Amino acid sequence: MTILSAASTGDHVVASRSLYGDTHLLLKRELPRLGIATTLVDPHDAHAWAAAVTPRTRVVLIEMPTNPTLRLFDLGPPRRAARSVGAILAADMTFATPINLRAAEHGVDAVIHSATKYLGGHSDLIAGVVAGSAKLVAGVAEMVKLYGASLDPQTAWLLERGVRTLPARMERHNASALALARWFRTVPGVRRVLHPGLPDHPDHALASSMMSGYGGMVSIVLEGGTEAADRFCRNLRLAAAAPSLGGVETLVSQPRHTSHSDLSAEELEAAGIEPGFVRISVGLEEIRDLQADFAAAASAAATPPP
Ligand SMILES: *Cc1c(COP(=O)(O)O)cnc(C)c1O
Image 1 (tube, rainbow, N blue to C red):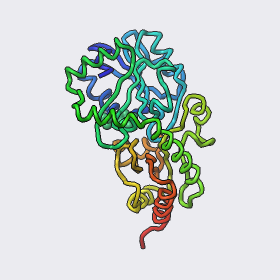
Image 2 (tube, rainbow, N blue to C red):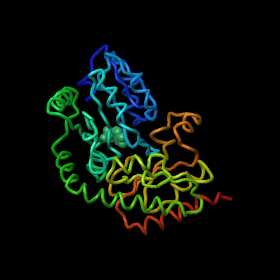
Image 3 (cartoon, protein in one colour):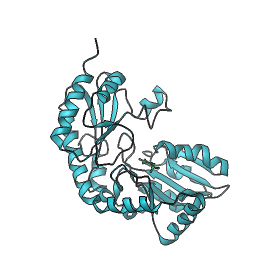
Image 4 (cartoon, rainbow, N blue to C red):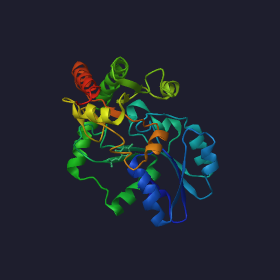
């Protein structure tokens, strides 16, 4: 809706290559039907943004931290590229939440959230949020009305209830995810742990300067590759192997089966999704219970069936 309110036939969108799967489809398959073209850029290449914008670029779109490798990048280059041609900078901040990263303070014009995730927080609604100037939001609201993306009253009520506890939930998500990330490094069979709060994460310094919490997502890579990851997910008892994220319950998913199922083995590797990659949305459960569950699943993952 943000893109449709800002761009028309003949216009252009520049977007990060690292996007939620259906956002990618929207840009590459749906918008071209309306005559809106998209150029995708490597978000970590600071020069790529300025090179990609044209006088017809109406929107520069980013997403941060990225799924599922939880990378961050400097918002200066996409912001300056957008400003240079009079485009808006739009940012999907679902993984960051407004508690951990206040994108408007970094010059983002349209702050976008899947409220289905942390804002609702209970995995019982589907909704989206766009925040920005009154003028921008009025334009988006008009598109929402025309295309039918309006919330029903029950969902709006559930979302309002969820948002009331967002700060308290995020405090716990942040603390539990960081504690689990540190602990996972001691678990046999876990080869790699990705979390922006770990000092060896490539964007740890940037995350520390931009975010007030590192978020509730942790990714791990299991020794034993894809079969080990399948066994790990099958052997969980407390955490559920299911898509989505940001709810009170811990959810575990393998990007190669879900968000990145269209990618070839080479493309997965290039996106940093090694064999054995598992993404974890850390919920609000007792951390010792989660550790017991993950330790048992990792042990089962390390033991191939006879
Ligand atoms: C889930 C998700 C979406 C899509 O949101 P829905 O509410 O499921 O339509 C978009 N962006 C990101 C980063 C997401 O995680």
